[in-house]
Image (cartoon, rainbow, N blue to C red; front, side):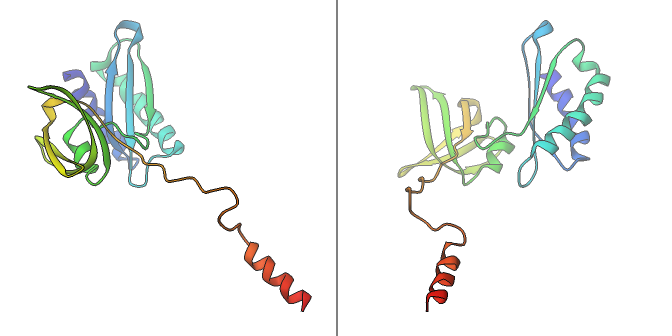
Length: 175
């Protein structure tokens, strides 16, 4: 954990210079099979160009950082539509979003799906149905935002671009 926090402090300035935020950082594996996953974001989302620029900016910083000695694989990406929620600031940014959350308490393990309505430094509040649940971050075993796809358009419904204009032009020619 100390290694990840050290990396977070080292990488944040390099990303800030590009107008990007360090959304999340995860170091997994051991020995030659270590992977450093860096999620970057910005208002409006991080596109491929932003991810490429972040990768180029982070590589020399990581090469010079003593807390990451030895081989590793660097993966840089955006958090995506369904974002992992791990830190209090992730929950705070997602207030108003639909979330899926797994948590444990004295009664066992539970899954909750609802709207994230509040978040502070210690817990979040989820509205599911007619109930509001306050869950401490220490009880959460997994959480992410949920992207709700809208219904697909029925075949043949809706208008095609320019169809109305062409139809009116044909009517004028016939008259």
